[in-house]
Image (cartoon, rainbow, N blue to C red; front, side):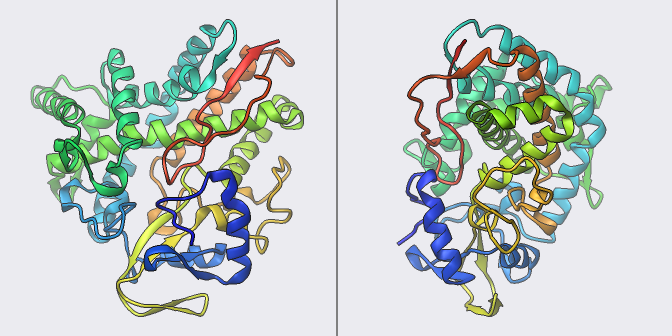
Amino acid sequence: MFDPFNPPPAQEQDPLLKRMRDEAPVVDIASGMRYVTRHADCREMLRDTQSFSNATGMKAPGVEIPLEDRLLGELDPPRHTLVRRVMVTALAPKLVHGAEPFMRETAAGLLAGITGATDLVPSFTVPLPNRVTVHILGFDPADADQLAAWAKGLMESTFPATNRTERGEGFVAAFPEFAGYIDEQIDRRAAQLADGTAPDDVLARLLQLTDDGEQLPRRQIRALVRNLITGGLTTTSQLLGNVLLELLSNPDVERAIRAGDDALGRVIEESLRLAPPIMFMARGCTREVEIGGCPIHPGTRVIAGFASANRDERVFDDADTFRVDRTNSDQHLTFGYGPHVCPGATLARVVAREGIRTFLDHFPPGSIRLAPGFVFENVPTYFERGPKRLPIELA
C-alpha cells in the first residue's frame, strides 16, 4: 500500500498516482492515512484550515513539535496567520528583486568554475540558492558551504519525519552546531539593532517585525531562519535541477527558453507542475468533513497529493507531457494554495529564472550535454523530487 513517508522511487510514483486518481478523489493508503488525489479536492482541503490542522506538518504520524519550534508549515491559524505575515513582510518583493544582481554574479562565478565534466548538483544547483539565502539573511558568505552541509545532513536524516536523530530529539539536540550558529546570528543582529548598526536584511526584519505588537520569540525566529536555509537547499535546488534536466534532455525546451524570458517563465511553472520539488503536504483532520463526497473522520492523517493533483487530467490537457506552450501550468499546487501558499515562492522563482538565464548565457547552444548513460536518481528525501546527480560534459 502506498506510503508517502516511505515511497517508491519518485519516477515510479506517477503511474501509481494516476491509478489512485482515476479510482477516487480520496484513497486509503498506509498507516490509516488518506490521500487526496485530485486538483479541485486538494485546493478545497488546503483552503479549509478549520477542518485540517497543519500542526503535525510533514512529520510521521504521532510526532508532536513544541509550538515555538515549529516551522511555518507546522502552524495553524491564528498563530500561522501572524507568523506568516511577518515572514511575507521580511521577504518583500523589493528585497528579493534587489538581490537579482547578486544572483546573476554568483551564478556566473559558479559556472565559470566548470571547465570539464562535472555534476551540476554540487557545482551549481545546490550552492546558488544556498548562497542567495545566506546573502539575504545577511550572514557571512564564507559560512555558506558549512550551512549547506548542515542543511543537507538534516534533510537527508531521520529528522524531517521524526524530529530526532541518534544525537537527540528536537533541532537543538539533533543538530547543536546548526542551531548554535543560528542563535549566534540572531544575538549578533539583535545587538546591532540595539546600537543602530544593523543592515536591512531578512534577519533584521524578522527581529523587528511584530506579531500583534510583540516581537516573535527567539525560538520562533530560529525556526523561520532554519526554514529559509533548508528551503533554499531543497525546494529551489530541486527546481533548478529539474529545469536543467528538462533543458538538457529536450532541445525544444532549450530553444524556447533561449528565444525569450516569457518562455523561461512558462518552463519554470511547467517544471513546478510536472516535477514538484515538494510532492505532498500532510494535515490532520480535526472534525467530521467531506472531500469530494468522501467522508473524513477526526484524527485521520490526510495527504494533499501535489504530485497527483498537478497531473489531474480534469485541469491539465495531456497532463503527463512537458509543454512549453501550456497556458495554465501556473495552476499547479506545488507552493500550496490559499492561506498556506509558500511565502518563499517568489524567491524560488526569481533564483531559478536568474540561474537558468545565466546558465544559457554562459553556455552557447550545443556546448554542453548530459553525460552519456545518465539515469535519473531522485534525491534521498521522501517528500522531494529532483535529481540527486546531474552529470554533464562540455561538447
